Image 1 (cartoon, one colour):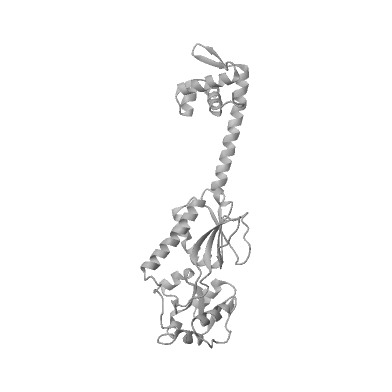
Image 2 (cartoon, helix red, strand yellow):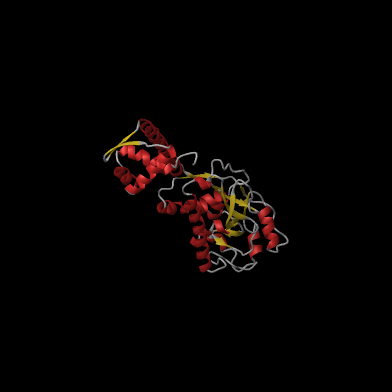
Length: 316
């Protein structure tokens, strides 16, 4: 005989005592009256004696059974309340997403309205993930980061999100200066905008085959969104991750000047922290992110394969 009586039998017994009959208990538990009778007999077998005094078709719980039923009612109420709290916690606590500024401003936020419209029940909180700083996954469910190799840790799962290859871009007015000229030479004669330091342009000119690059001068921006804003406002040429400025290129606000790239080994990655599986909407958000990414890739491919949209190809 098992140490503890079967839970289903206890549930049936508590319902019979509270409802006053086998039929009423069966209706509440959505089972047959015969099933209730079977559960009660099994429970009486476990206790080794009757739980009810029977008067014709009427039942009255014996004193020890009446005490058991009251304790069971309190216990089932407590279990129900605990389950409700756990369910409410999963639903009501926001899904916290950390993103580096480029992903937040250029990819995630412009699409967030569409996600909220499709999934209004998902409460979200968007926070910055600063490049190079460790993310506290005690508070964060997902994070978008930029790295030269796939981040690896026991604290999170890593999924490739978007490529990090950067290309030279500028506003259409400045792009006209490159038409009909050697691209690298023409760019070297323009104002250069730098992301964090001068190394990006140094590498780009070497790859473009320009052996006498311009002096390392021009404004340096510590945040990609500042760099992008400067390029959009016509202040010079910037090296930007093409995946992050896709909408600017498609809209004609920026023009790609060359197919030569830098930071090809870098990538944007989606990290899923250890708390994410416990949240009710983890799968919903992850599926949406990857679906949006794949749809974007399909649109780019159908638009010309080599990203010709917004592309000024004047040679290298």
